Length: 234
Image 1 (cartoon, rainbow, N blue to C red):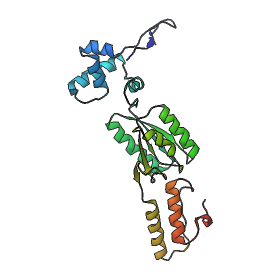
Image 2 (spheres, rainbow, N blue to C red; image 1 turned 180 degrees about the horizontal axis):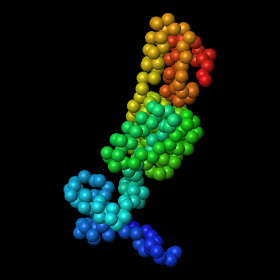
Image 3 (cartoon, rainbow, N blue to C red; image 1 turned 135 degrees about the vertical axis):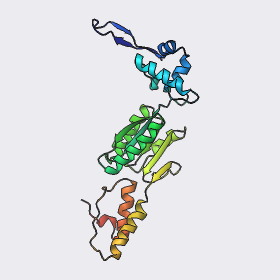
Image 4 (cartoon, rainbow, N blue to C red; image 1 turned 135 degrees about the horizontal axis):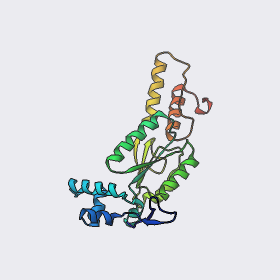
């Protein structure tokens, strides 16, 4: 880690001193720079007592690990960050999903970067470009668009993509996914209402667009025996 410059407290403007680095922590603790680096990054095979000593000294000196620089030195050039792209942060389902993702990521010392696609394929693609520019370790996406094939160039090199809430878009069946049974569950729900004698059935949900929303609309169309194009949304 190379030291940057910080202003001396109470000094004239422009008078700087080097910011403490891993080398300073190593000198203070009597450990090697490599051991200090591994301890601060939470890597295995570092004694807990050593980890606590290093972290305490780093906190005292104000030393922070530079994950960007470290990522560029790693073969994969990936950071300890995960990009999460959801359709709508205002959706309570999205909030709960993000909370779970962040909880698991924190146990692995990863930070979560988030973006709201607002159910817009264009916004979705721009956000993915930004995540890739920040060299995230992987992406978790609740798709808004129906084409994510442009990510195949990334996954071909081992980049991790996980699709949530909806099946992977067409042509991306090799990706990992955690999905809801949108079509079957919606179809069964409408069928239950019909068996109870209901004939005027309302649907409150996402607008058309995105795999999951389209599956739910298709199920309603099938059960109500009306083309999806004739169903209105508000």
